[in-house]
Length: 293
Length: 341
Image (cartoon, rainbow over all chains, first blue to last red; front, side, top):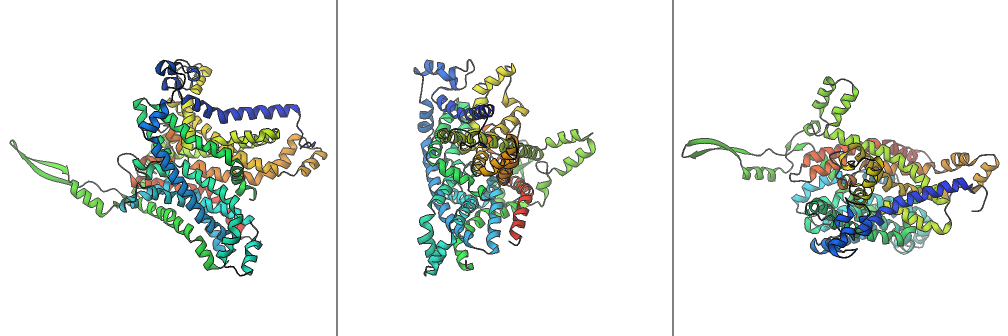
């Protein structure tokens, strides 16, 4: 964009660049610091004597003989069985994403094609549901779930997370389907398809970009959830985030904060990879609802 | 689209939302009107070598039977809402009569758990939301002027605080501001006060929680504004320049009006998300200094005795709060739709 209206004088450019540098350090440094620190012992990660210990690992060297140690990871994954939580997280996310998308595409498609007033009310109610903090619903789940013996199971949590995800999924997919021209499926119906056949043969092949983006956000919602998973899962079925929270409660006394640090790094790593691979989709998803108003 | 086709298409979503969102809300409202059973007490004569004494003890079996029979508890009406842990009518009334001056009244209110949580939640929402928007806008402007090759990595790094699990992100920051962490030590050095500890100070804790909130949400505002900036019409910018608008005036009168619809969108999402602030309080173990409505519910539900009714009452009050907060938006959406187009 080498036009004059967008050209910047040097001073503005300098200001913008230095602000950006400041922000990038703010955004990235905490992660780098924690990743580095996760390979040290607690005495270095929280160094009372000298903060530089955390960089060079003075205590780590005296305690373990090397500058780096995998003790935190060993303790978390092997002793505390964090791998089980990782597996649970994987199961929960996989099913939440598949079920959310299946139900969401059907509903979102119908909402984008219906011109009746109730479609609007449906979306408005979904918006209200989206606004409710999940934890307020949890207090409504507990009693019935105890009663019918549903509490603590992975499957219950999956269904609950799908339901909590639905309003958002519907809104997002509704916006995506609105962008697919109506003529496409209507001409298929003129040719004799039923509505469902039109959806199956005409819409499904072209909807993938929107579905992938929505799937990413469903994944994030399930993966990052703490309120629901911590209240509805029994100890054996915990996913990674509530398991991490339980480390915080117990490990402080055992002096094993490093388990929690290792867990934090392990939870963050898949998210990093995801952003790296799907950056474009995430950006387009975040703006989908906004730019079109 | 035909009514019946629409019905079958939305059925799965509608069913799930009805069962797991609408019904639980009804169940929460009902639960909040009941309170836990008192334990059944029995008095028995306990006769020993020194004569008989009446002893009162809990009849475990009868208590359990009662709980199994009526799991909701006994009818309490609005009593739970009025008690000390929620709206605390009698405490507020007596404070209103007894204290001198408004500041003192405010202080008394902040000692009541519900008002304390409400105060933090509202402060957090109304401080973090505008700052997020401003901060996100500046990042978007700055990224927009970066060389093209650097844009990808810049956006990648910028997205990180937003994508990361809230519990994890806040934990990372919390470890850094710990008195033995790098930022905590840095703060002690800056203020020249070796005893400074964020954990021990209420104002610092509030500030840290809000800093976390902005750090976490700014990337979201950034992405939305950045996308908006790509669609600013460069012809109107040039026209404004020919008309003699300087740099700032071009931003003020061309770019900002263009982005304004996006500001309402970001504000709406941020109001919803900030009102439910919860995870950072868990990670910062900030409950002594700051609690939020969501945290209060979590706290009632966890622990040894699950205070279902108390949690339910707080939930109902939270839902009412969010309804009031969002009512302008909902009314506007409704009007836009009702307008003959």
